Figure 1 (spheres, rainbow over the protein chains, first blue to last red):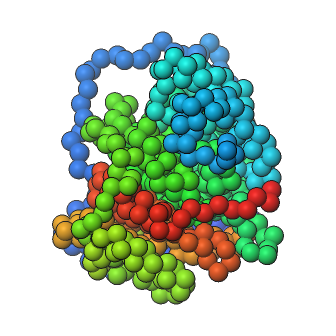
Figure 2: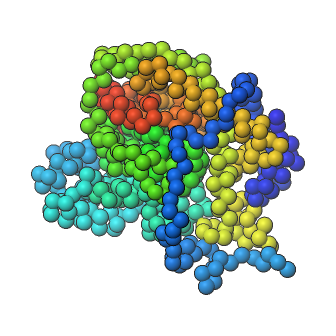
Length: 95
Length: 491
């Protein structure tokens, strides 16, 4: 399988990464090189094989449904590029 | 007395006990070495004030007899570990100004045991790379050079800064993270010891996430025993990481030096790859001879799905990365590039904040997870991963205690020598290490010799789940036989 220029733009949009027109061809080549490399997985017989979900067998841990942390709003917004009264600021999303 | 920067951990501890030098003096010696080695670009942030403050606190604890197991030991921390109040950028532009308000569990464990933070080391951006060349902070130059040549050599990656810092004696040990070989390959390239423990052995909490089902933290050191001491502090159960395992941490240092008599060592025949350089083959043979001489038995084993590990990895890792790196949106932390609306803000921030390798991997991950391709790529890769793990389980069930392989298919390469148009060429570096991450197993790289140009080569030992002890025992045998390797100072 390989991707065309249209698909490259579509993937970039899904990934929320702006791609300039003059970058599409290079990206297409690089992505297709990786897709060609992974193509060999098609020759593996995976009939009846379960896809891996956990690399070490472990029971999902459970913990008490209690509050263990909180009251650190200042810490949470500390690294934000734009805040106001402990809210994150974003451009207007509703007209 | 040997220079303070060339000590082992055990020697440093003995020196404190005999009052030959203080923790502050040991730290000062390393800070001076770091300053003198800036041309290597191993550190992206030096923290001298904090280091001296921690060292003085160590001296106070040593004086009152309350020293921890790593008291006063100066360490370098890969820029992937969040350190409270100390910038942690994963060597990415998108996190260039991120100062965590919390400490990763692994580093917290090291400070609990008395270690001293010298600074943060360079790595490939978000640990995505095998040469440290994708770092936003520029490449690291290895302290090693080819005989009679000034060509700058890559220390490998992604933990290139940590490996170079340990090799150049800028710290007594360092932390790394390993998703496909990012500890073991740079360890092999720099003549240092590096271990990736079993998945779940070290907490991932507070480590910048790349591929969560593969990422593990581990140490770099100049001897097997030092690596064992460091892992003993780093490992342990953590409530904050649900994949962290609740089982006691053994005395790893005690395992280094234990007899390996009667152990059965698997030699996977699929690791004899086409075009493998003769000196790698020879090194491997030498390793077998060393282990045999120490009383172990060599057994040929088969891991039939070995060749599919790397292609499966290049689906699973980017898929998980695309999901993990969705958090960098220019809203909550890091870089923000304004746009006319929120969508443009996201797209511009991520285009400018991520470097080319990271952008490409996010896009590949997005593609293999997208509707219509999910089963063909992602689900198939996870099925292949099940088969890779089963290969190892079958071999271990056949009575093998560990496996011996080369760590890398070649010695280190020059900076820029492998950054052509085809990303796969660089990926092939991890052909011997990536299987171990795919199966969640522990793997250690131990220096074993030099190539014809005088560059280090490493052997890898692969263990059963949570049997790091056997790896330290075997690694110690190789270290005793091969000796230790130190680059000549030129910087």
